[in-house]
Structures are given as C-alpha cells and as structure tokens.
Picture 1: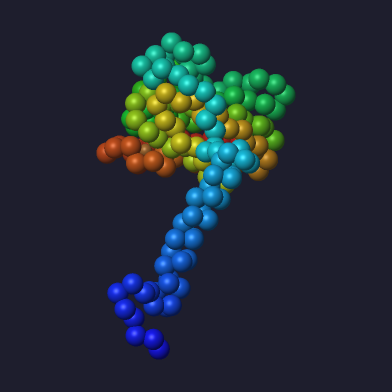
Picture 2: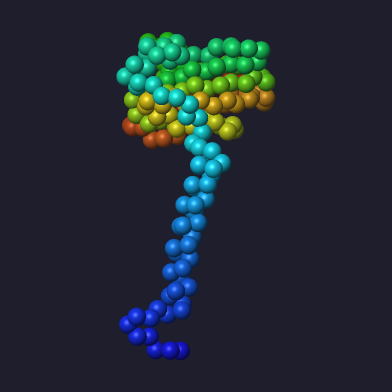
Length: 170
Ligand SMILES: [Cu+2]
C-alpha cells in the first residue's frame, strides 16, 4: 500500500466519507420531494386560529359531537392541560366520552388552547399534532364496534397521563 503524505486520503477513509455525506443528502432530497413535489405533509393541519380566542371562534365555541349527515359526524375537540374538551367549556370532567353508531365516519376538528398536544386514537390512522394556533382535522371510519381509547401522545406536563378519552362505537 502507498504511504500517505499529508494531502492524500486513504481509499478506505474515502469509502466511509462518501456514504456519510451521500446518505444524508439523499434523505434531504427525499424529504424535499415528498413535501414539495408530492404534497405529503403532517396529518391534519387545515387552518389557523387565535389561541387566545378559542372559546369565541367557531366551531370551537361549541365543542362536542354532532351529526352532519347519514352516518357522518363531526367531533369538535379543544385540547388543554390536561383534558380533551368535547362539551361545553365549563364541563370540568377530565374524561371525554363520545358515542357513534357502527359504520360512522367521524371528522375530528381539534385545536389547542395552551401547549402542544397530540391526538392518537387506537386502532385507527388518527395521529395528529395539536398545536396552539392551528386547526387540525382528519376523518376516520369506524366499522368495528368497540371502545377506542384516545390519548395525548405529546408530553404536555405533569397531568399528561390524565389526558385521555373514549370513543364508543355501538
Ligand atoms: Cu399530553
């Protein structure tokens, strides 16, 4: 093997340097293509809201579940430390329970009043960041009866583990 002088790089060194630059570059290109060319974005963000005026801003002035068509429901939910509000703003119960018939399509419209939360509903694709100032929206279909736990999946303070509710599918 050739003895290296100050300016040369061993071929083995180069074999590691090249992929350690090429792999991150390829990943950044892949993220840019998926975000800008294919339009793949974080689930749900559909609008902006003044987080200080959640109570006065529709639809969050009337949180809760409502039927909007045959087998179609809208669940308007406000996240705050440390509960999901899906009833009148003065309802102090920590646990939210929503009930829909089997085969329902439920659109979740969610925002946060204070800090960053996350909404994850078990056994569904619903997995959204709930960020103050943003309205997150997603739709899921519930064909299998049962209780679907929904939780906050973004650590939001000491009461984070209390932040859960249940969607009953009858
Ligand atoms: Cu949390």
